[in-house]
Image 1 (tube, rainbow over the protein chains, first blue to last red):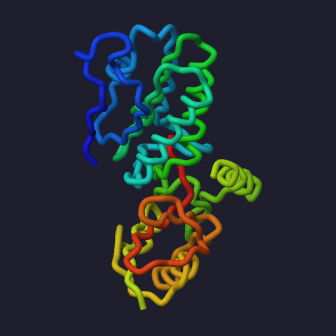
Image 2 (image 1 turned 90 degrees about the vertical axis):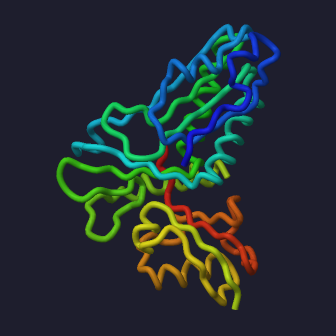
Image 3 (image 1 turned 60 degrees about the horizontal axis):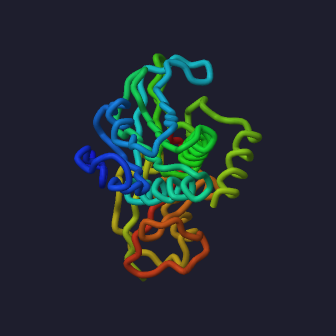
Length: 184
Length: 80
């Protein structure tokens, strides 16, 4: 998967209306630079900017995690990601929104997902940012495999594959099913 | 018999030992195709926990399966 240039993201477009606020979702195989991502989003209309950064943490459900592998179904992930950004723009009075998700093998502390929203006012920016990250986690076909300090690696959310102890209880599975149904 | 092109991800990819394959099948729906491939490859995920995409869009398990369709089986999502 190659990182792609954001359409309309050039700095030469000038401040203000010239830069189209098209929905933008990308999968990227190289490390993310939040400062650069923010700069690509800002323009003269943006009175507020809100971002969310999801990073690889060293523990999950009580186990020491060494690293994470992300895999994506690129063709569908890009469509669904673009739909979520469009929904955020339809629901909230924002100026622009973008989201970028890493794929590949990440280490503890690495930036895995970045969501940025600009708006004239902060309420819409916070609400849209929250909407995008929540929907992205529930709907965009991306998977992560955790590598632990001890024991075999496991795909997250996959329940209990043969020989693994990484099962989730039925309540959690039901909850995630309800959420999947409600968003489709 | 028809020919479909199947993509696998995450645990399904590992259990199938391939990311994609050409499948000749008599299955009439994606649900029947999943049952057939789950038996062949030993998938541990029940169909209730998997979604299906047809030609790179979310699809219905009980829709008719067309010849030459590109089918992707989507295990439980875990991005972010």
